[in-house]
Picture 1: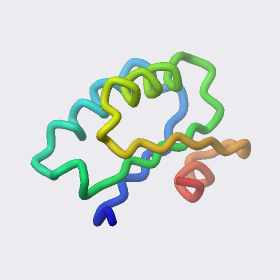
Picture 2 (picture 1 turned 180 degrees about the horizontal axis):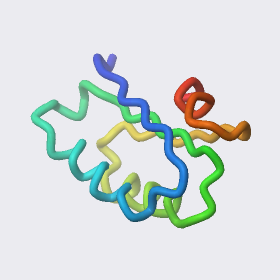
Picture 3 (picture 1 turned 90 degrees about the horizontal axis):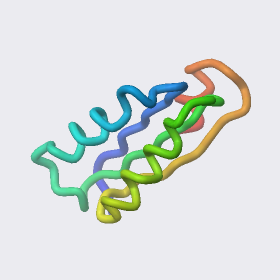
Length: 80
C-alpha cells in the first residue's frame, strides 16, 4: 500500500511537466510509498505525450493519468 498520493491537475503544461515529474522523482521518498495521479483538464498541447513518455521511462513510479471534461482546475483536482 502506498502512503502518499500526489494529485496534479494540469492544462497545457508541456513546458513544465518534465521538470515537475523529475523533481518528484528526485525526492528522498521511496517510490513504493507514493502514487502520482495526474488529471488533464483538456490540454491541447503535448503535455499528455510527455507524461506518457516519462511514465514509460519510469515504470517504477506509480503514475496514473486521468482526465476530466468539465473545464476548471477545481474539477481536475477533484477528479485526481
